[in-house]
Image 1 (spheres, protein in one colour):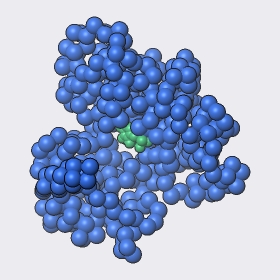
Image 2 (cartoon, rainbow, N blue to C red):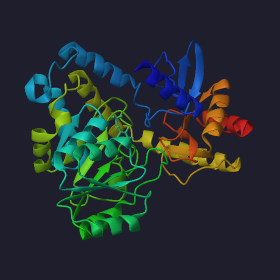
Image 3 (tube, rainbow, N blue to C red):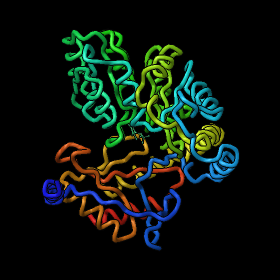
Image 4 (cartoon, rainbow, N blue to C red):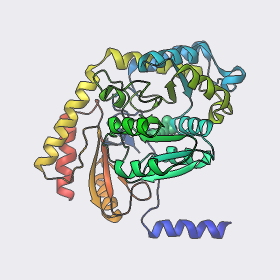
Length: 383
Ligand SMILES: *Cc1c(COP(=O)(O)O)cnc(C)c1O
């Protein structure tokens, strides 16, 4: 085994694909501390700057005083508390759906939904750039898998037309996590209707951020439960905590409680975290300036980056990739920035297709204009 692992790791190293972890020593803010040195970071999914909000910290402390720490069991045994239950009701209200079901992570939510609803008689249609958890979920379900080129809905239509599967699912990211573009949901809704497919949107990067009131890509396009019957959202990104949920009809949620294995066979989130998420959901609604501030910063970033002719991609979301192409170049630029006190992750294959390695800049309402200036001038210098 050791020889095998050694060879495997050496191959990754030679292909410039070897990954290492930085060790951070403080809270998630635009300034991160590594070994007593501050770094300016553009990497987190904490889009609204809630991860270190004082009210969340207090909520967590107070809930820990009441519930202590571990939930002790899965939801169907004795792990389901008033905190989890209230959060689910609030998530249902927030998304305007009959019910919502809490999962421990977004990865598990996707696995749970798709394996619960689909099997080898069915077909799942996936955008090539969908998040890995949707792809893994489809694989695990044993449904036929059809992947269409990114946002190429004519290919999707052809695949849908040819399929004779019992049930068809179109599963898509709402905002694509590596490109930052938004799924063409109205057209997907139309295709789903025409070919009797069900539509599932994973809105990990849209929820809390997009739409008039932050309800995500479905709000952006004004779509309800009839158009998008399965909505998945995460609670570790814009909401700054951890966890995920699926929202939909009463029947959908009851079915998932009975059969979603990644819901049933795992320990419930600590109740104090559920309480913390409730507070986060409240703040996201009360402090709508956070969303507006984020939008301002996105516009500012794109304006300044264009002045410096940086290779931006067409994104209106806080995910703003800078396309560099070769893996080695993306890595070299990321390292050069790091030496200058700035952290922007290089995203390489297999996370993105060969030849599209990039720096993935993500913005947060907690950033300042002058921090964006520093990023862009340093980047221009390095390039
Ligand atoms: C982050 C992410 C997930 C996984 O969510 P976690 O809660 O981090 O497990 C799923 N889908 C998409 C599109 C994501 O970006």
